[in-house]
Length: 597
Image (tube, rainbow, N blue to C red; front, side):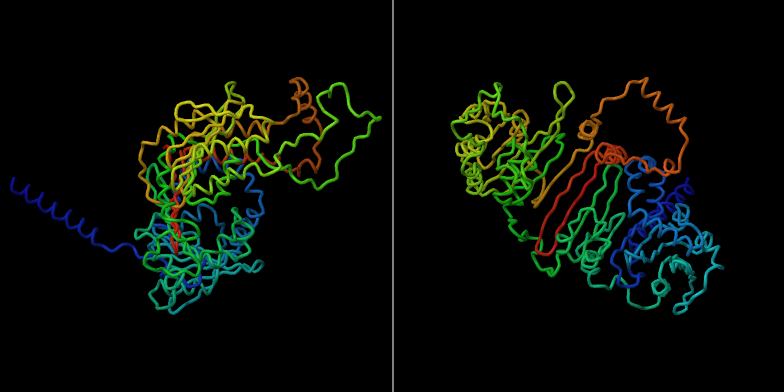
């Protein structure tokens, strides 16, 4: 018995000692200290091998490779450029850089630094024991490479004579290095071997970005020299957002990805160009954003109902921005002058008739009544918004199917927070006058009737409005408005922010597929089954020509096939949200992806 207790005590001490060692052991040193300077993008993973294994085993990979989205991408100019670079790399590396190649070189802690986007010049460093390095296919082919040495650190290089593409690699007891430029490989091998020298971690832009980043790095961390990236021609050509001017206001950025079973979270930090960090640098003082506006954004999020399709809250919108959103999203049909025509009007030649018996309602003895008022019908509405000093606005949208299940239409509720109580009567009058020129020559359909806490127009347009102190609600769906007004008593747990938005992918995906399918559906009448079968049979019997063999595949419709296939690939992504907080010298963004499984 005593011996058993002694063994248990020894085991407990051993376990406790190991746990203490693990707690006190220093975290893995970032690999940026092994990268040569002047990189413009740096990516580091805590466990690259694990990430790559998850992707290869995922249903998303299988689905995406079969999707229309991938099919379109594989025919794009960018894909062709990458494919050409892959072939050149294969010739220089003496083996194809396929998934087997990537898996073999994927250690746990790994990092990639890109120095030239156009030429794809990079250095890759991964933590890998030398015994495993020597088992890789590229190491087995080292006799086809030329040996080199950098301060006593040996490595191997091979140049493709046709493309002049360079591939080199080297290994130490703990790290494996792969690169596409000889001087970069030499510099990385010297740093990995413990030789002193300049490295990426010493760069000013990198140090500032890391200082502003979360202390605990994510499973994946990306650091960007935005001042350099924004000026590269490849960025201007291929960056899908095309917001080059906006990007140039930032000098650097860092993004950390944290993963759990049901959530992926990105923490982004963007450093403003030319600004220095100072005490209080997180205070919102950029542009027209105020502290009251950021608090109002956090407060408005409480009105977002469960299952909302899309919501967006923004701080301190201008009166013109608030008016435009109200006109576009709620006050349809759009009010305003007819668009300017730049083409001459068409002339219909007739036999001289100036009318017909079916046009008896058109008067010829007076000028036709203009649909639009002589003065801007929305001036009063804009004046009301300016007088209220809107601190924040919330836009909540969702799609609804008609009773017959055929048509789908968007529904919107706008919530405005003012600096003082709203003039409810003045807003109702301003809305009437804004709608009148496009709807009626009198007041038909523009009378307000009260229904509970809201007012509704008595015509065909389902416009509703409600006000509660500093809150103003305007919607084209009275039922949706009432549901949101009923949430006034709830509380928000969000911290002040300049912007907050969310998208319910799970709830809106089916309606999106249905709507875009209707939009893209061919209008031509379908052939009968017999005619279709005869056409197919004739096509099979017809001899195939060279032009038929080279005929390109049909381009998938953008929304109903291309984007729909991407939505199907990511069908397990339940929702996405973003929260933005602006400061004097930095912008923080938190993007959260919620997975259903």
